[in-house]
Amino acid sequence: EKAMLNYEIKALNPADYEKCYEIWGSPQAEAEQWLDELDHGNRKIFMACSRETFIGEIALVYEKNDPQYTIPGQERIYPAWLFKKEYQGQDVAGALVDYVIAQA
Image (cartoon, rainbow, N blue to C red; front, side, top):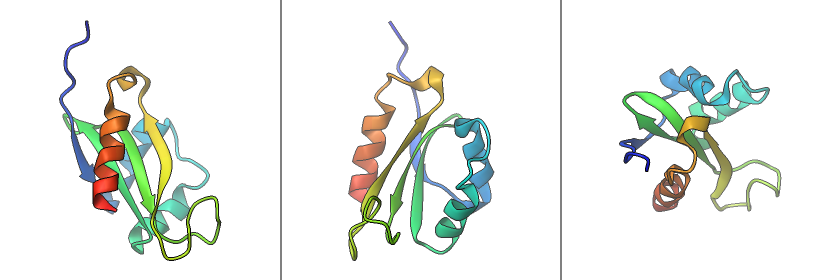
């Protein structure tokens, strides 16, 4: 049986953005655009952290002239549940979804 995972969920500080690479494995093609959206308040990123290690993330996007991402004038959860493999299956995704819905 797995031990209970201790983690916290917090909003990403833009200064810590490169720590997302710990989850992605490398910078993503969209990383510069996402950082710009974060800096301008169009995106909020919430991180699950265990002992200062980023283990998962989810984003809330406000406007993105693309019906796949947003409904005009409404927030939409961007389904970016990215996790380090060793933390999958520990209900971190469910906790992130609950947290971001409460923030929306």
